[in-house]
Length: 203
Length: 203
Image (cartoon, rainbow over all chains, first blue to last red; front, side):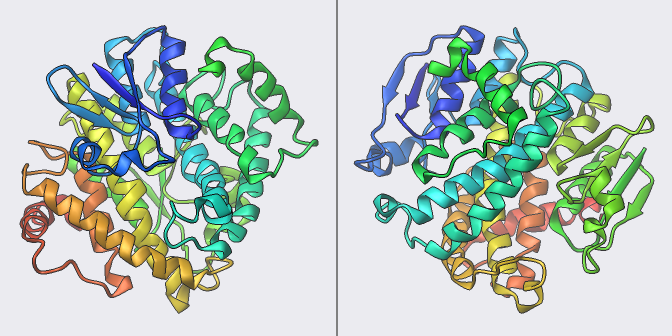
């Protein structure tokens, strides 16, 4: 088994944290996004969608997409469960993972990829107006997330889950956008300190 | 149990097709997106993210997000499985569901929401340049999807799954963009005829 991994990008980090929480070690192959190694013929053959993370099993089967790779490991190493146990818990974690990923995280990425001059060769065409539009969306999503964290210790409820991993990676990915989590989002800050103190956060 | 549902939008349809495939009937409450009923105080209380579909359980618990609602039903009514059985099958279906949804479907929605004059009061700000940028992305994604359908009968492999539901709703949602699936995407057309002939497609 081999995990094709990349530095700095938020999606590969989601899988690294997931594996660290499970205590699983997987041999890694680093793919350099900055020099477009993920767009090489060799990598395109492995994953035609040209993204990391990508997992290659010993028989050559390829699984891509951070959440799909995480689910594969959840199925073969169920403890500790990071996708929930009961039907309702599973649904609630999936709901929050999606709310964070399809809303907030996607908005953070749009602000960065369409706004940062260094991304002009990666994101073609770069649409600055789209980056601007996403700044307000991102802050509105963050407020709803802060509200939720005023109700429960973790984003999807009483226990740490994959949705917290997604949120941590998304919040940390605000850094290159140079926009900060507002001081008055006290619930989010409380949560951030808790989750960021876990050893897995260094993955 | 009550399902808050809306006409025409692709995400509520995903849940309707999922329920039809499972043979589950759930009482529905129609929410009119055109008159912004999903942004009313009452609905915002139910789902602060203001989206349909939204599922309300008898004890008042609310589950939102089409895939999270579908997973809840998969857990309580496992047959026929639409998220897969083995760890690998589950991972592959999740991978394809995400590739279709986060890529192709998101691109189709961007073309429509940011390009159609009728959406100018829904999508604020409407960024026409973003709609234009997504036309090429959408067609590139569609080609990769066509390639995959040349290898296997259904998008995630040998069996019909939630990923086919997502793809069907996304392809049908190309209609308001006035862009058609190219004639030479013969694998996609073959798949479309198969999947669209299932009774669930009318849901």
